[in-house]
Image (tube, rainbow, N blue to C red; front, top):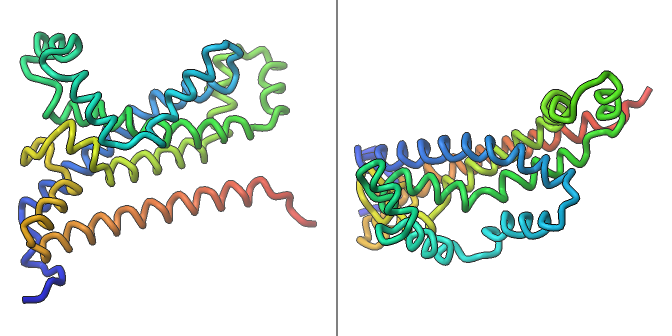
Length: 238
């Protein structure tokens, strides 16, 4: 039997896991943008002594093993924790081993991949644009949302693309926090691992190929955004 992916291997379970993965990535990215844009702006302009600590905490998921993050999230979201008990009393279910728990974990794990590109783009906004907004009587909030954020839109889009791609490829955090519940927490990366463990290579190939295509497409999008930003910043020859 060939191990190559076939159309017969594209089972409903595969599409269910893939849809769950895309849904998780889309929801997490939307929440990440809502958090990362104001957070990046605050980190760029604040002079508070706590700022380096906040920035280090935000960046920590980049260097920390995903299983470590997943373990502490599992402990923090468990039914015996304060947060887990409060969640269960309100919603009637546990936050651990649920899709909502995966969303929260994904937001925490992917936060630096959203914040850093946006923060870098905000730092590159021309001072003249900010000064012009202030000179026209805009408040700092108005300058940020109407001048700085539009000027940093490529960084925002890059942060969104990186967050989406990073969530698509999550494994350690979702395995520790969500387990392997079909239709609830069994995302494509977990399903790929399971099929490999059972030596079902045709289906494993299908999962791997779909994830590869999605990841490659997101990288192409990020590259296009960066090239566009460089071309706009480059002075035009007359």
